[in-house]
Image 1: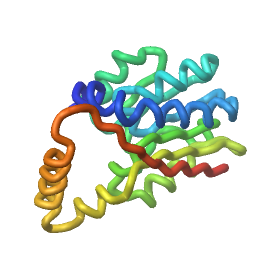
Image 2: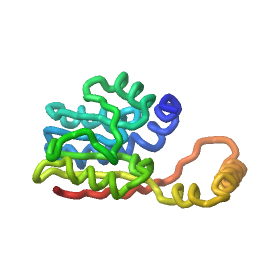
Image 3: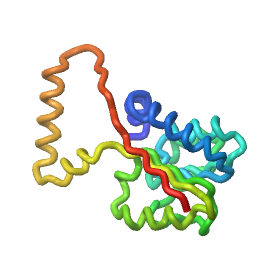
Length: 176
């Protein structure tokens, strides 16, 4: 999955949003950044470039993502971590960021409680998540059939050639 994510999702979906979130993060001039659900490191790379003097800790629960991300972006400190039980001290970061990873947190309230704990006074948290439609479809008992029907209909309409489609993301910003 990490290689497929890097090859297909990063260029099409994640890169542009990483650039946006990086610009927002860099404007805060953080010294210590915690990234949750870092995946293969597209946001991590941008954070290191935009804030070269910052210490970036990139985390992910998935070991395969960590392995690829740490190879791609060795300038960050990589660690396996569950966002619902962060292995970091209270007030240890100036900035906590997460791009598209919130959808993987089984208990979002617990994860947000943890995220609220780790910023230093005056620290900030930023989240960039995709559409909730995916979660709504996955919760349905006929979710796989709905997904298959959407894929079939999309392929029938688009046939061959390139596809351009607008995307929307919601950016949440919180201060400690």
